[in-house]
Image (cartoon, rainbow, N blue to C red; front, side):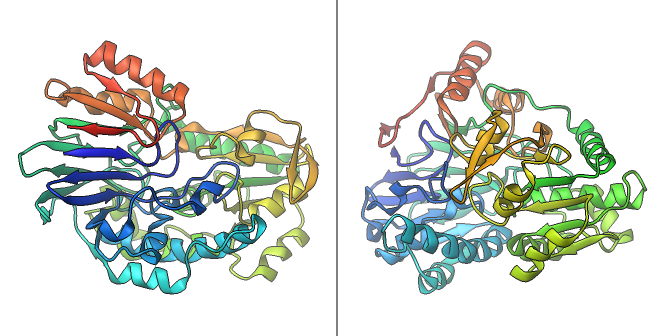
Length: 452
């Protein structure tokens, strides 16, 4: 059995791993590479393999850096099967259609053809099947089982077993558990090899129990200053978590009543998927299911306004401060948040709050790292607003969580391959795994091939 690392190798985004055995070829994820741009130039390049030769794709979860190039695979000949959990399939259709709009604009900016169109998305969805956690399936001789990764609704780590019994675990993105809505990351299972994410491989998040208090403090301080609180948030999971916690803060009178805008059509649509699954204990934790029986609107509260149409979004500017704006994209590399940052970053009364990972080179990362002037839509914007980050809102596991997850299975592990991380984070986690678990660790580069 052979694994080829075609993405997320010594970098965070672009998840794409090729697994070959006995003439069969399976991909795990096929995502966009995203840094300073929503779609980096290398996404327009040809695939390093023939899409028509791929027998199946296994999808860990629906974030665009894990699914964003699947329609391109279809366009260039892929006609195999696609498997994920049912929520991931539902999310994928909305996310890919929304991504298509942004990709069209960015393709024109760099003088390239759009990498896929609506018919490609429709073709992809026709090949896609939903598989529940722990439902064992066989794909061309590979045994496959999905387990709850606790990262976003429906996210999975996937265990693949070859014909000769070798077991490989693909972590996808591991969750920062316990999360407010979904079930926690399930224990790792015994395998021979594991591909493990390392986004926060050298970091320790704040205590999850304190994050709501930090959110409350940030809102109160911004409202007291008469300012605008901007929250760049990923449309999938982060926005729903923020809504869920704002709902509790508002209903318990813990924050002043102030207008809250969800300025993301995609997030509004994805929240409807959450609502459809909110009573399903396969995906949601017990606390959320119990609460949803007494509070029928766990993502809604007085003062919340959802702005679907462009004119509604633009009208936010005319609403007097203080106010709270939650908008995409989560790394400020596209979406409606850019207009709000352009309008409000230069005012010291305002606050920008980061609640998710900011990739190196992204606008969000530049602001978080303290740059005093940033370029938005070709204009220089002074950063005088207060900059706040709450790491506990990250949906990614930190270093202690990854170590504790691997610890019970370390005696059987032949090797761990670190993926989905910046090199300094990978090296920090690699050192810990070697020192504390006595397991061999490799940090593959793009295109590396490994025979298992």
